Length: 125
Image (cartoon, rainbow, N blue to C red):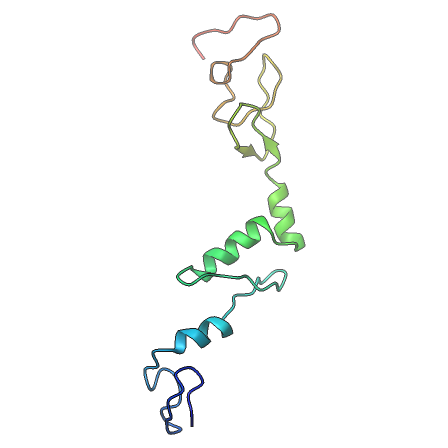
């Protein structure tokens, strides 16, 4: 029988890629082993050398259209108002002085250049 990857001829015992140590098997393995998202059944394209599990995880975190994946993304909806910060929190963290939403890192008045309504900012924070 002829190997479909390297085009060499082998007996039935050695026709598998592993049994004849086929040097061209990667061509066929990449075509046949495309990872599929377990939530939405979408094939996930990967490049040579990339870990399929990582790419599927990234797809679930960003692009997956299934209900569980979208619900997971909607948990963190409270975006920090500090310029340049992209952190999101599960709950609103509102400054007591300016009443603006921030992440846990920027929640204190001294951490976000707070402009209080009437009260001075203490240095003890």
